[in-house]
Image 1 (cartoon, rainbow, N blue to C red):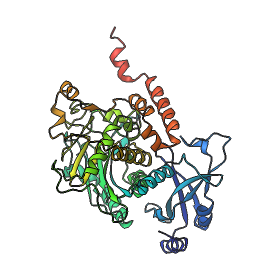
Image 2 (tube, helix red, strand yellow; image 1 turned 180 degrees about the horizontal axis):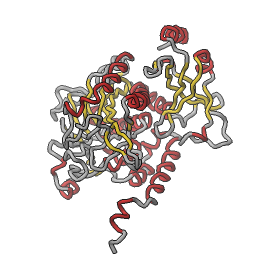
Image 3 (cartoon, rainbow, N blue to C red; image 1 turned 90 degrees about the horizontal axis):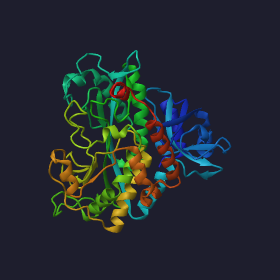
Image 4 (cartoon, rainbow, N blue to C red; image 1 turned 120 degrees about the horizontal axis):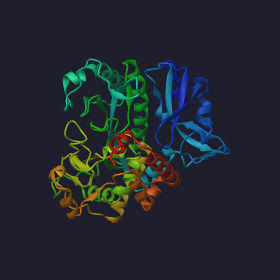
Length: 452
């Protein structure tokens, strides 16, 4: 654990002159105040002040007392694109009391419950994102400076990835200097889409890193003439972006992976505890979806079937069925290796603090109730007829934000994981849906103007 004196020494050594005191709103967007390094003690003891009514979803009005963001010394992160500046993630306080509307504070509360049960929630998240450019008419297109990223199946393609190598290498090298353990990068399934993978760690650290990663991509991409977007589905005919979650529970004392059991009778290398955890996630999947896919746009990505009509590559790679399986990407949850599970449905738009709090709460409910997820699905879910899937009893994830939020309203486990944020979240998402639902789109004009 970092100490004040150690951080002061590190700041001097790194030539830091300014600090970004950073928290997130309900959407997971980074909010900051910049303070000179001489204000470090005040940022630790008092915090940087914010008017909460200016920020989405933090439960304040214009009459409310200031929110104060107090930095967490363990999150010291030099900003490589602004070398005299460092970022600290912060927790919100109001009137000297920890503020429960803070998504980071809420995750810490839930992880405290996890630790009380003897566990640590270890997580890796894969931030897929696009590089795009804007056209004069305001539309967007994939960033493609060499005019070569046009394949229907560009995933892993060398020529398509080559123009982005400098961007990806800069991010990878700098993140590794921060100790993140970047171990691979690739061109993803859509034109202009990329992914950088870094090491597993505890859920709070991973959530902090995802926010910083989004901050970094937004700034580094500008150097290369691109806009980095974590919008889940910026193009209707290309694969969307996920924030795939790899996870297991570890023993709080020894650090041992409690999901691992090489003698697993189902042949997946998962323990009974892991199956109960999966049982909980699957049981709460429809309400959990509101938190892990929290925008209208997410549901353009989260579609039934193979998505052959909505992706040039032939697949959306985003299962909408509430299933788990072996190393099989057509399942909601795949077993990526013994003791290693991956949920492929989580959206790039997810607030990682809220998503991970809700996710682990669902899993712990499964452990507490000893829920059995049933036998794994081993076939290609994309090829099974929808009627057959429904008749088999397999559930389907919500196909709209409205449907997901409607499920969340009734799920006390997931609502409890969000704490006081739950009502604010539901209300904000209902407003988002209603605003979207009132729009008249160009598709509707083209389809119906002279139809009747």
